[in-house]
Length: 134
Length: 232
Length: 145
Image 1 (cartoon, each protein chain N blue to C red):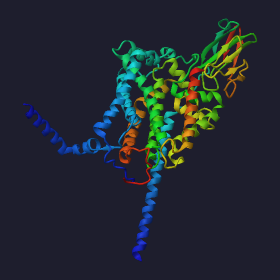
Image 2: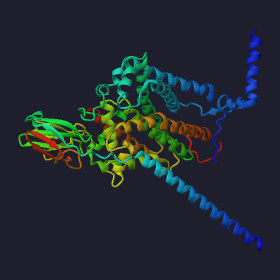
Image 3: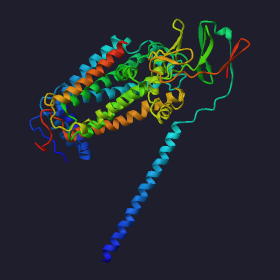
Image 4: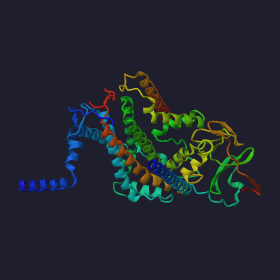
């Protein structure tokens, strides 16, 4: 079996790392509470306050932000093609460790990978923003 | 008096340790476990996802107390939680905000792993369990979306469950399997409810346990150092 | 020699049993999977062949109406060329189309698919035309069959 590095002068998991985890958790909770107590309208909008009616489609329905990119993609190209492209993309992501077998890890040490990953990420964000504004 | 209490406290601890070996566990896993020096905020995102998942379990169980999974009563019961039940609005808002933040944090976590190259050998299986957890997170958000039985839930689910339709041969069957019928119907609500509150959370717990076990046995990845040489 | 022979025989028996047990387990698993899939995919309920009658007065010229027929929505449009009836379920992703009078088209609100009054796709992503619904007009009533 793979022998892991021991880090004899590394930081202690408890308390040092646990405390740095807690700092992140409390920072998150601050934003979280801000959203719940001061911006409740962001969470529940229009059509979520009307009971479901199978005989009437509301105008302008849009998915949540995390599904906007695939939704926008479906509008652009024929459905089956879009499905195939997205499935292949997902598979590439899942099997990435078996596709990218180089040993270099840092961002700048493997510019080709960084370039591809950044382009895909920017394309995804662009689709999301486009979907949000259209 | 204080000394006397402390004696009892230590005796109880020793009694427990003698029967469980918990002291060694705490030493090995917490107080004497060392991780690479200088881990920044990106390394806390996995822990944060776990924290939000726990939060979702708690708020989810609270909602479960009043929510009724039936097409006639679901919408009303959610309105009751929002209006009549003390702090109901807070619990539901927290559950909704929690779902958004969990997806956001999980995606950030994945991006950090992606750009730091932490998915490489020997951490392929950790990456695979992580991918499964990401898809299950999206799945649990998707199934939960239908439960309030509002116009938004109904039509968003209609559109999304129609997506597999054009797949040759099996497409229509997949759609029928997801919906339990030709259209979104009362059965769809109930199967999504079962998936949302039992099936997906249980699988996610098991996968999260495997994910963390692997992180523990393989150690935290150091982006400056390829993992080819084993040992120090 | 004898020993080796009996050893081989034993291995054969063991291999055979291993195959047998794996096969049985696989069969049991397939049967269970069949039960699960069939359980989760009930056959559609037999639709009653009932007729639905709507007085034409309910759909005056220049209006449209969505009614429930056999558990499915049906859109009836009364335009200058007379009555047409379709299943309003968009062939793209299943939203319900609406009649836009000014442009004389059926518009899907989800991805802006457009159909003309014969059901044909004019614009947008829908892969096939709207499904027509058969109807007759008898004595000022629209009868959906």
